[in-house]
Image 1 (cartoon, rainbow, N blue to C red):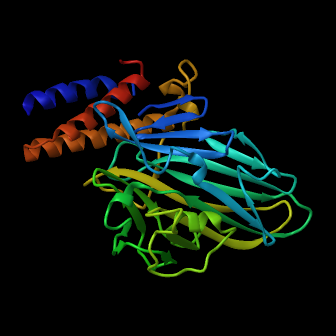
Image 2: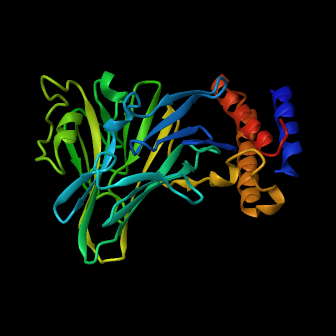
Image 3: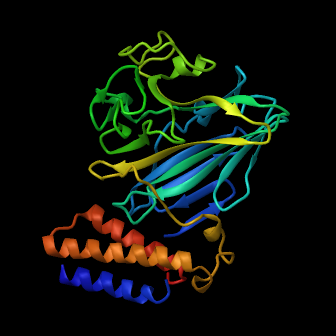
Length: 346
């Protein structure tokens, strides 16, 4: 353990004076343990979690074989549009400090922005915040609502497809503010996907766990049948999904509404926090040669120094306990590699 501490802390000391790396290649972004892939042609995205830091192995957090099974629907004055499939909307990647997809029509622009975030228990990004901003471009006030359908799959081999901090979920379930706690989880025994439940503000008004095809086939909402199983025979068996509903509200011409949700990955036994902490913007770290120097980015310095302080505190904890697992050691080394790479100390 003493040799371990000397080796790790020596490398930390070399970084403190020169102070988590994100990479961008077209539609692919990564930060910490999270990789985000934007599918511009279809207007969808995929999200992956690094379950093995030693070998840099990513696993999908929701269905990625056909990303089109997860999507956004907007309802405008009782008419629905499935973004990515409606001919009324063009799709492009957005500008700005964070990855984004933009859906544009003559009457509405919706920007889907992705912000890498971390739990308070982690020095590395372990999830994303998704900010949906719908701007009314018509000449009159419109009632605008948003549905975000997520095709989950991790829990489909388990007894319960989902669980919250209060109970297991094995059938169709509707959550409103205060009815289910702060989060839901879908897991497969090795790692899991977490998401938030209604909590007021810009969060969803309702979150519904149900059969994917039943939700996919509905233009907007379904008549909820509490406890109904996750089958829709004969086409969709043991097939679950989660739908976030942001109910329609009046939006003046030229104005906009925002809707927010978060998703996070975690290995079995790892903690997550509902209070998400944004990590460094991806544009600043995008391509080799384009990243600002540490002297030009005091915010990045503060963030990296905080990460190092947390890292040292964790090492002290391992020293005090006398125990460290291979996974914990790999996570420490991965954090160090990221910091070293960011400051050209490979």
